Length: 322
Ligand code: 2DE
Ligand code: MG
Ligand code: MG
Ligand code: MG
Ligand code: MG
Image (cartoon, rainbow, N blue to C red; front, side):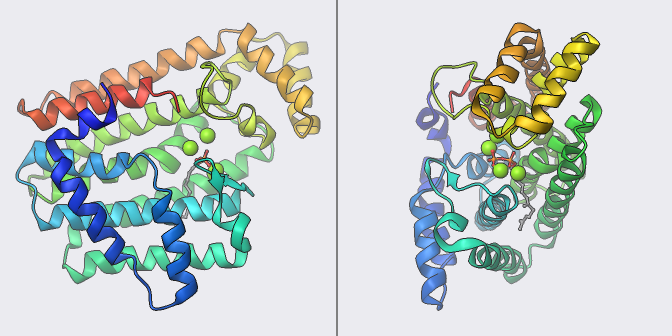
């Protein structure tokens, strides 16, 4: 099903959220306001607010605190992407120029800092300490994941275990915080919160595996290919392909990534190598395993329209084309 249909049980809330979010983000500093406007106009698919509200609804009645959770998550997500593009020296985001591309690193760093503090203050203002704890824990994991990734990318010594650790921290932690914080806005049952955290973590891992598959252009539409290889980012399809290769192929491919990852024809050769191995099928299988584990957790909640929509959102995450 399409995203709009999945949104249906929370359509009113999402619309109200968007308005509130724009208000929250206002700043007396004109430059800040201009950049915020630029970002808000190019918003993504709003998957994280969807996870927050659907999780809230699947565990209780949506209330003001659900909006606090959604705002906080969306602000932190935005901050993390602004900083991520600085870290990755990436000049494009969602098909548009990134903040660092338009305003340079100095400003992008400050914008990210501003959003981060703004987000934390939203939770404090409403005295939502549990939600503040959940999200702050996620931000810490984001930064740790990024650092771990950089540390390992330098030596290309990423094995499967490290790969999963990196994506658990840099991507899954924030989706886990979305489902958990959403739930925390409507229930205080710690067992449920733990369940919703694990549920989000499984989705997040599946989400990142799908994203990493895009880089090899398994589907004809969507994202540009080979960016991760260019950045020497070792992702699951490649890691598996290298594990299966004989030593001479392995050395040849590693050398290409190490020395020639700025040459498009060499990147294409690495992509071809992964296509000719079992790398893509292997990563897809892993992704579906995480999806199934997410479903198993979700099915411990009582049946409801929100639970059903969450299930469809999970399917959307793994089947999406961009
Ligand atoms: C995206 O990974 C991961 C983003 C996490 C970034 C977190 C940082 C810590 P990708 P894409 C920088 C700072 C956090 C704050 C300020 C809240 O693989 O392809 O680079 O979307 O993803 O660029
Ligand atoms: Mg990036
Ligand atoms: Mg990054
Ligand atoms: Mg990517
Ligand atoms: Mg991405």
